[in-house]
Image (cartoon, one colour):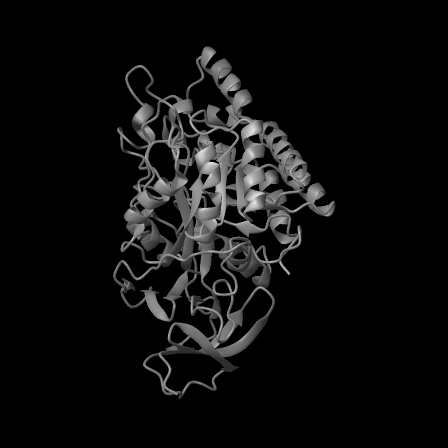
Length: 489
């Protein structure tokens, strides 16, 4: 057999094993694993010598906001800086082969299917990675709830996201229960942004009454107890609807994580996600001169160094099922649709309540977490790829390296100590954002190759992005794979 691609002399890492294997790829699938070096002379259109570098399933980032309108903060004009083209271009340069981003339904928009159709038009023909959609649901009207069945069976969309905060998106508890009921009936996973929106609005009013407008007060308006309370409430609501599975997204607070752990230990199907901003940033990053701290404004806000350590522990012990980027990009210098849209003569340091909430991170997620070396290699693959595939109905096509079954979606790292320290700079990244919150942070490795269905799309030493946009395909998803409340089976 002549293979399309052979990868030799690599150390393959999956969510369960580390072993020296060669990999052969044909017709976009992994077709063979063989002892290291045994395929070095195989007949193939291309052979890549991994030189002892790690070979892993491609990263799967299931929390990204691309080409979204100004829907989050009432009174703010912030809209996503990245299109599907630039966002997936950045993703693939960071070792990702699949992303799942959002098809947003606005308040007053009755149809979820209409939101999906709009998002398809934005994404089709523009992506460098394979991709799917979550529906971002802000109006659970009867028509929208009735469309859950069609979303799942015809559109291949098996997840929705709801908010307990942001006035423009916030659902009340009775609305949340209606979403959970319909989600359970249709085997759709409900993602929950858990912060107490009513309390944080009250706190924001109190801070502004004291003349506190600077970016650092964003953290004061969202203390950890708001996240812990909302997390507990979301878990309680899910238990009321016959223990319906939920995923609590971007958890930053150890108390919230502890409540999740308690529910998991009790056998409830509660899943959780955290993000690099809660591992590498702190609230001190918001307290920079002038308006500079706005570059790190996201919700929930980064916490403390000790909180970071607790979140790392939660990743290691499977409290957190996935590590996602929550890539939500806004340009810093943009005074119309970016971070500085709330800066004017009256408010020279802006008003934190109107700063677009979100930071870029789709390209830096894997290098940061890999270089930190705080997770076992198998755990790193589990939380950055395999669990996402299982949770979102992509496994084993994605997130695995099973011959004859898995797409040939791979990331190949440099051999250990090959690169030395790399200082992250915005100029080296491929998003359409004018800053990175991780400027100057040092990593010890970077994806050398990213391979999508057997096609090299990122070759760091051989031209960077080496594919045309549009190589990425929409992937229809099923229900989540069988998972315990604690970890993937």
